[in-house]
Image (cartoon, rainbow, N blue to C red; front, side):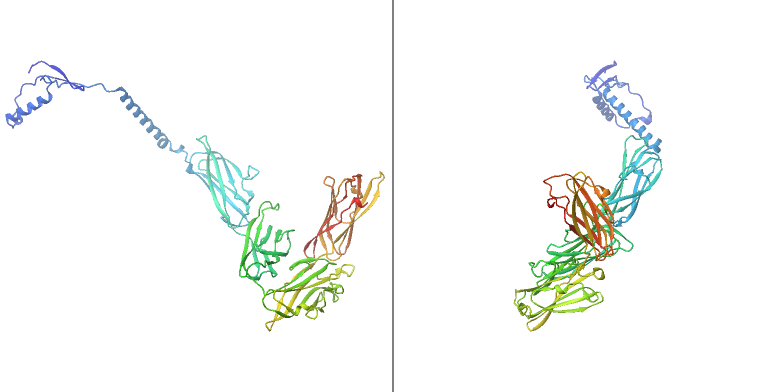
Length: 632
């Protein structure tokens, strides 16, 4: 091998420079290779084969050249290192060096507490608490509330900022600061209906520019109404027969309810009469009460339809509901209800009494006729023999003389008549009919009907002094005896109760004259009379038509106050009380016709008069005549 250095390149990665191997040095004794000379030569030969150049020369191992690395790769590693460095610095700044300036939404605490089960209309209070459990202030903080349906706001411990009383400004909530607010109101709603009271806390953290919101809520339910409902109705009734239903409502002790409605319903129940204070006009079964402070009773009379199959059941339902305000707007809330299944059966004998078209409770007036009918129908398959009908009428009396005018009794056929004094104020009369007077009572075949009609007047103020009668109730019922299958039977009819109300009446007259200008002047007189019961809250109303004028100084009003609206042309006369000691009140109002209208027929409408009968506790509505121009 040559002693000169030679360079060569082996592949494209490295360049090696080598020189001749040095001469073999003498090794110490402890470094002497114990292997055989032959083995040592083999190893040397192998190394030469590995490192020799292509031309058989050896590279110079003291010189080593590397290929230049990529600059893009180096820049990438520098950028990656920089990013990691700044991330670590930021983490240390936010979480290690300055931990006290961090905002955490979970450290804003909002709660609301209060009764979750409440009574209808009861006053309730809810407390809203808020807390800032961190070292960051909360700016522009405010509370908003979404009230449950039926909640009526009363007051709050912090003044509200809206007309709806549903928002409050808190300003800044300091770090570690807290506070609370109380809201008081009344809750109305359907019984057992779940509601939600929701609260919102809006704020801006001191180290942020955007608004955050915290929400809390409490669930509440109206579990009871402060009243009791009791309904009396038979479990089994005869289809087509008179059925009475008594409804009682009473407030809980110490409670008073306002704006209450009582109603009843049944698909197959035909109502003939209802009674009780607050009964709605033109409503079959409904009462509206402004306030309930004591027990109230309502009565319904009617019958289930006869075409219902025997054994069928019908639901009779009574609902008590209420409004949260006197306006009674919208549908009322359901406070309590009653439902009962009534079993219907077919009667063998249908037997009832009807007075003035009713079979239950109603009102009558002095001078009015009692038109009574007793109806017997054999719906069975057995013949009725020797029927005898007894009709009983109890009425007010004075000095053992009945308020009924028995001298004007009108009955088809004839009857045995008996009288009996039951008390100082009540006298009883009986009419007994049998086959001697009514031939049809001798034998009533299956499917046959027998009816008996009776007309008996009530005395008026010209026939007697009505104020002498201390009672004002009339009771009518009947009893039927007959023989069927050799067995004597007795049936009792329904009972009809009549309340005699005041003989309130109004007479309208018109006196025509002329004024100095030649205009027609109609002096209209409303003459109000009453001689039986004391009255209160009388209101008389009528409309006036045409081009007219009324001079208020010419109006004569004996009692109360008279109002006249020039725009609406309505006359309203209000009288607080009218006792029986004042039996007549006359109001005179001159009406001047400024322009004649040939097509005009009426000067006034009919007069409507409303009053409350103090004795019978009933509302009276009557109508007086209108003034017709054509009659002049």
